[in-house]
Length: 258
Length: 68
Image (cartoon, rainbow over all chains, first blue to last red; front, side, top):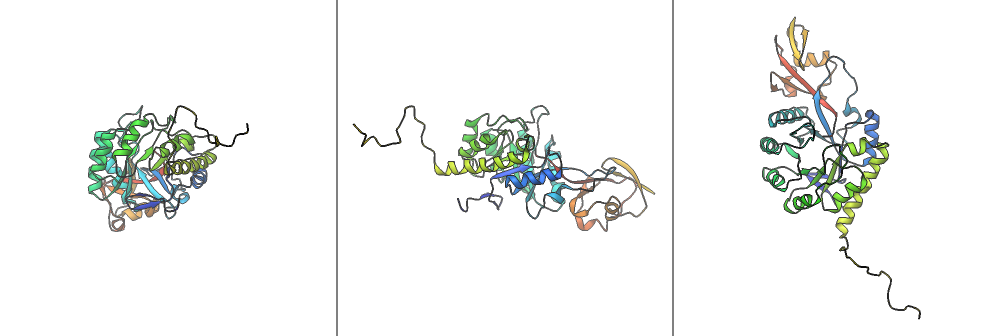
């Protein structure tokens, strides 16, 4: 599958897997897992520098912005204002104008506040950001996000960190059919088959963090996810056989011995 | 001395401290951070010429591990 790029806001990615950098044991494990995943786009959180106890090591010493597309996220923001402010700060760091936009609605579910999300997306698109919104598996909201100019839509498979896989494949399918910008399944992927299913459905990519970082062997899971996303994509492009209730022999019926 | 509020923490600094001086004192590389001064985000070119005043509030952020 040569030249089967995922293009988001003009950026071409060979790998359709986007990974997070949270929950790893240390920066070294983060780097090794990301390398094993084959991902080219990597999401990071925006946080206050620790003034009192300066930790000399920086995540970007391990995840080289020259090698990876850095995708700052607004995780932890509960209002459109907070998310917009965080995105502006992220851009001011001078590395990128990409933002994984999150406006969280509730601490227990971490489901998006979609009203706040659309409001923030509108502002950030106008300011020239390339906006990748984390959204619910709601086709109408996905359409609104596309209409306000988001570079892709990123519906959740299941709650963040839940590992439940795609809870509502029919909604994801409707989103895929109605949206022209790339559809990236973001959050809730638990294992390789979840990622493969998303890709077989025709989604353009998968974004995950806990599914890899929380595995017993994150490096091995990162590699598994790399293959799952590729396999799912290949199967989607290949065009699967229709499902049938009865058998259909794959050996010829002619020439049987009598 | 002047009192500045860095990420919510009050700290004393010499008068005429610039944002660039402050980052140096904090051993923080300007390339890896963004600075907001009294709710206004500064361009990196402003760091060297922005002199801080008593009571200024700064947010200094960088990127850390995170997914969602």
